[in-house]
Length: 250
Image (tube, rainbow, N blue to C red; front, side):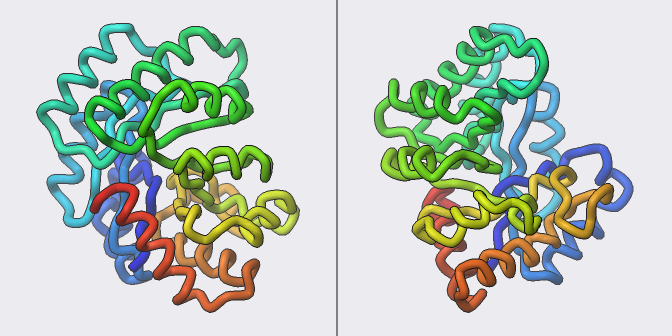
């Protein structure tokens, strides 16, 4: 009944024990993971892993933090035409990295939004210090749907995205007591607008700093949401499960 909507299970840190990691996740009620790509070189690897294990779903895209060639967009279109994907991503904008090439990032982001429209797929969006520009680019397209993963924006930005039909992904960051703004968002946003994720192996939870993050830890994120909203975890789980099924058409 729990789905990790953003997990880089293809990462090399899982090569030695990927089967055990998946088994641990299932033992903790995390039945499914969505694995988003970061570049053209990860597509084949993700496809192989999703074919090898049950209940793993691939999303193919081009992450803004990695160098890409204009021809990669054509390659992505061809790949999507011949391979099953539950979403396009992760794609987006990242102004946190040094010397961010905004023009180049925007080109690849808009091109992938266009592909999402063409293939009628949701987008998994990476937005770091760039939420306003992400919203501006989304507004240039009609009938887009998706999730802004690892959301760290304001309540106003959150509502703008929700009004556009987008969902917001939350992960280990909300387990930190000092993440006051995010924890307040969790308390106030409509539950129907929330997805849960780990972003494993990154973004370790509070108390697990310096350790590899894993999809099994999604249960702790769920419990944090339940505590913050003072709601039974089962109610939270059922609603977010339905949110995920509807967005990705699983």
